[in-house]
Every structure is written in C-alpha cells, then in structure tokens.
Length: 517
Image 1 (cartoon, rainbow, N blue to C red):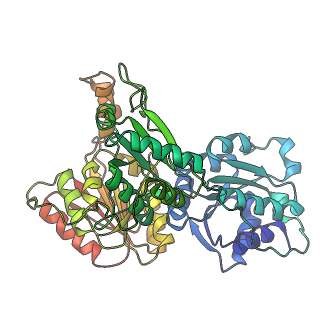
Image 2 (spheres, rainbow, N blue to C red; image 1 turned 180 degrees about the vertical axis):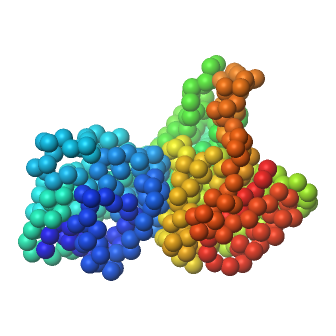
Image 3 (cartoon, rainbow, N blue to C red; image 1 turned 60 degrees about the horizontal axis):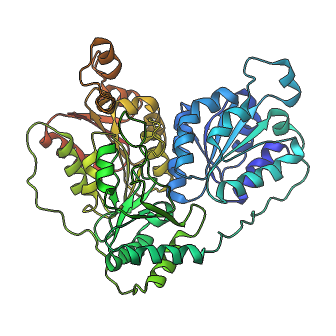
C-alpha cells in the first residue's frame, strides 16, 4: 500500500468523502489512489479558487471538512482568496497540496516554492508529510486540527511520500476532544451586565449560535431582558425565515453601523468578535461601538455556544416557555412592475424562496435589502463570503449543493465578483447541481464607487471610471453561462424576472438569470 492509498483511507475512515480537486503532475499518485476509492466523490474545479470556495460551502452546510487537492505552491496560491474566506468563517477544511519528491527540491525546479509560507496565513495548521510512514499520523493530525476547533488545515504531500510503500495500516476513527466546558464565571459576568443595563445591551451571535435552536434561546433572552440581537456584517451561516428569531445585521457602511450601535452600553459576543470597520476612513472610527462600551465574551469559537446560551438563560431566570419575537407574515407591499430594480429582485426572491433553500449571497451592494426581507421568507439557510475576498459566491453555492442534495440553492451574485470564479458554473453543469444563479448585472464595481465617496472623492475622472466600470465591453452572462453548460436567460423587467425565477425554481438543475439593473 502506498502513501496515497493510506491518505485516502484515513480520510474515508473519518467520513471525509468529498474531494474538490485541481491536480497536477505531483499529485498523480494521489489521483490514482482516489480512482481506487469509489466511496470518495471527486469534484473537478477548473480554477483553484472554485475548489477552495466549494470546500468552504460544503463545510458550512455539513459542519465537517471536505478535502481539496491542489498542485504545488502556485496551485495553492490560486486558491488562497477563498481559503481566506473559509478561515474567517471558521470552516473545517483539509487542503492537500502536492509537492516535488523530497530529493528533487534541492534542484529548484520551476514549480518549487515555499508552500509552508504560502499556506500559513490562510491556515490554522500546516504540516509537511515526512515520508510514507508519516502519511497516516499526519493525515489523522490534519483531520483532528480541522475540527478542534473547526478551521482550515493544510497538509503538504511530497510525491515520494505518495508513491512510497507505507506498509500495512488500519485507519480508524480519530478521537476528538470534547469542547471546553462552559465558563460559568463568564456567564455570571454577562448576566450581571445585562441586569445592570436593560435596553442598552446588544448580543452578537455567530457560528452555532446562529442556528435556529440556539437563536430561539437568544430570542427568549432578548425578549425577557431587553437585549438587542445582532449578527456580524458578513454572515458565515444563519438559519432565517418565518418562525425563527431574526437578528439585525450590523450594516457595512461605518456611519450606519455606528448609528445602529450608538446606544449599546454592553456588547455580548457569542461565537464572534467585536465588530470593526472594514477599512480606515478619514475622520471615521475603526471601532463601531463607543469607546466606553463594555465588550464581554459569553463563549468563543470552539466552545459549545448553544450550551452557553442555555446557561445564560438559566442564570437570568428566563423560562423555557418565554416567547421569543419571531418573524411572521410578509409585510404588505405592492408587487413591483416595469423596469427591473435591485429591490424588486430582493422582494421577488424572498417571496418565492422555497422552504429549506440555501441562499449564498455575494451580490454585495445590490442585494442589501434581501437580508431584511429574508426574515419573512420560508425557512432557509443564509450565508455570505466572510473575509471580504470576492469570488466566493459561485463556489459557495457549488459546495452547498453538493453538501445538501435535494435542497434548492440560490446564489445572489454581483457581476464583478462573479467573474473571479465564473468557472464554477462549469462544475455546476458537470455535477448537475440544483443551483439558481441570479447575477445583478449593473456592469460596474458599484461597491468601489461607494468606497470612493467614503474616502472623500465625490467626482471621478476617466482613469478612475475605467477601473470601476464593466461596460466597455459589457459582460454577456447568458453567453458565459451557456458556454459553461448552464442554461441561462436575461431579464430587464420585473415581469420577465418573475417568470424566469418561477421556471428556474420549478425544476432541478443549474440555471442562471442575468438581471439587468
């Protein structure tokens, strides 16, 4: 048995049964081993950013890692942007990066690079396999590191470790340490602060605290103790929709965010970090809460967030029968007609969203209204790119669809962001994934126009316009999608968009709507 076979067997023994891949020569022995393991589903991405982004989407929906297969340092480098998003989402992921045979490295062949140096900033754990005998312990360590607590790990596989004889092995389940015990002192400190500032306490929930069962507990605390519930600006995964507690998303713009948080004297963190501005802007704060706001951590990533919320409820004397404020029926609003707008798209998608759908939102500026409306939609999962690195939407949707067959996936996609990983549409076609991609085609980097204003530039000239607009030539998303094997159509009126969305939702398989706004 060679090292590559052992690596596959260790992964499969621990239920890592999907490999998103873009291999090269150094990985051919691992590819051959995968070919001998029919239990492993191998999914080809035409660009490494699709591979790592799909692994991120898969992990967010399953709470377990997929493997990726990347070709040496340059292949890893192509996937780093979506590894960054995955790292910010605390997504479990096992990146397997092939490298030259160990004895070939001193020759400094063209693809030789510092893989450890490339991987480290986007990984919580990096290890190079020392040889065939090291494959099993290294792979088991990678699996353990990916889940304790969940995060991105990178395992470097030299070619001679893959093809070398590893001897007989019997891979088994890796034992994981239980999450740390709830810090009762932290629970009591948070309860004391909540009692002392009724109506002026905010609570940010993320990770497992943003799932429906934990949100219900947070909602009971909110209703009983006048605590305002928030999500972070960029949401890794939240369960939304009618009958569920709906936290307020902290806005992206600094002025709007500070206004929302201005009256908060105590901010409680459950699985997240204190919110800060994305960038430094002249004359604007970096922190979004007031400097005198008391920031307390109830429980951090890696701890049992559900149990922490239960303990806080008990400490505050909140009854399990305490009703929580939940979203109910859609507010009355006229159905838009005529020329298509971004708000009309948001309203239509929210109203038509199928139950148990998955929404991957990378529409950036164009779909900002959708999140508020999604509170009234059918119950669903909602996620975004979490690291600010664009190009995550199409791959996230791809990974989510592989993770959850039978559930409709809706990708709200900006036209500029979508071009970073448009190759993911080909993977959706090849795997016949049930993804509806809605491209907000405003033919500009609209968010960057806003950022120019945020830094004090209110009028731009030709050079700046050429760097911010996408209209010469205009992108043709229908042709792009069809060229990737995905059926597509264009809408420029509300009526046409509604008809296309109805058709796309009525049948399985990938479909793209280019929405001209």
